[in-house]
Image (cartoon, rainbow, N blue to C red; front, side):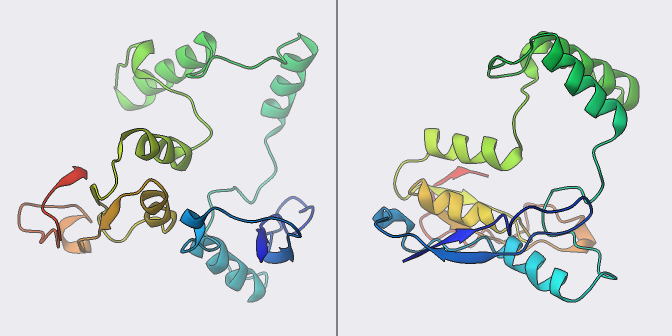
Length: 190
């Protein structure tokens, strides 16, 4: 048995990590992981990185630039001010207010604080939602193309992914004419 080492060791700013495997002595994975491998997106990123420095890798959501100075400074100031405890699960009131102000100013959108949730990323939120709401066999419609790990998330939650194709011609959106390719006829998520 091997487990993925997705860090590739310490990465310098602007460099890209590679996918490696390493032995995991004594580790016995749960049976539900049998069909789950290393994220295809990470494998694509590793192949792209091997092509050289002239390749722009869009596989992972991690920026390839250093964290801006004002963000590093704000983080340091927060630590010095004692903001080192767990934050509320949906975000601090100050952060939610800043997000609300940004969306109102830049996008003309007005959300109430209870409509804003701060999280570590979309994949985390989607995984949590699937785990909390899918019963075994429940169908999840995932329009293709899609982020590859969504299939594994549905599988881990006991669901069944249905992946109807979309096209550039319709803006990559599902339409009433998109064949759902549903096998069981009971979609729980779309």
